[in-house]
Figure 1 (spheres, rainbow, N blue to C red):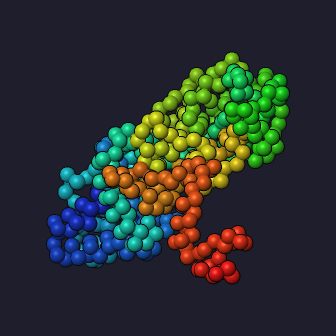
Figure 2: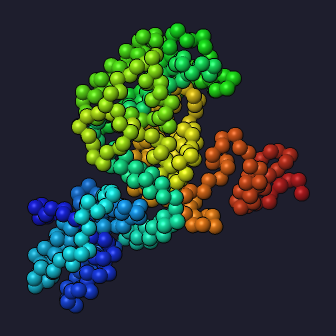
Length: 419
């Protein structure tokens, strides 16, 4: 895309540009505008709006204060289309700009994020899906809009590739919550635009003899991502303080938790006394230069799944399962911290919310009497111990396979030696 001096001063709705703008032009202008903005034309690598490194076309998705979304062109893109058509001799003069009333300033939008489509079919499908989602959102819980906005804000901050994202988890003795027995962490930072990770798991020496297992799972000895290290109470306090201080010197620190309340309480306890003087729970729209920001993956996931009830949040194990992270040995502080970080990466590093939800769980919304954007889960998807015999039988029936009670084998169609 040439004309590098073009500046994004606003956005136009895709529908306004496709349906309304051509109607204000001459027949000659209308024909060439429709041709250059056609779905299949936009995704061509030789298109004037093609962006290097992007497969297909890059447009924008804007979120309005009411939570609804619209597909957008930037004003710079439309300005360049006008310039290019005239420079190529396809119009005698530069086509007039769309009427000013349809120009959306960034200040009138909650969020604006770039979004790309690989082919014309994807673009056509996205337009229909966005319209369906907007209709469903009109009937959703008002708080869902806040969670959806938070999801896109976290995604935007993650993709800015700045600061350090630091997931932490603690395990306490089940009979005395003031005794922190384990500490785990997993962090992601960027070096020259490349993500660099680090993780660890520590067991407090003084409390090695205090084991869980009656009320809380005991997986202290099953750290999945490295070797467990011993540390004293004093050493743990010093290590956490040192890590937070050093990370803070290099920019903002995003503290990542799955339901932050218990972990923040532990960080503020006498056993840890972490330096949290510049901590905030308000997630900024743009990366701050310094300070600590709390990011809660239970809230981020609630936005993704379309859950508006503030009291209804999925557990870390449920979230990890639903994101296909295949969690094992939960309630090990190191594992929990790392699965929290992996869950954040999966969500924040993925597509825009609605596109990501449909890719992960296609056609699982709106299955209730009242249409909504909330994903409708099956019991077996949420509970690893759940055994739904009828669901298994239905699946076998649908696949055309039978079950041989003598051998315990699945058999194709109705083939059996025991007729």
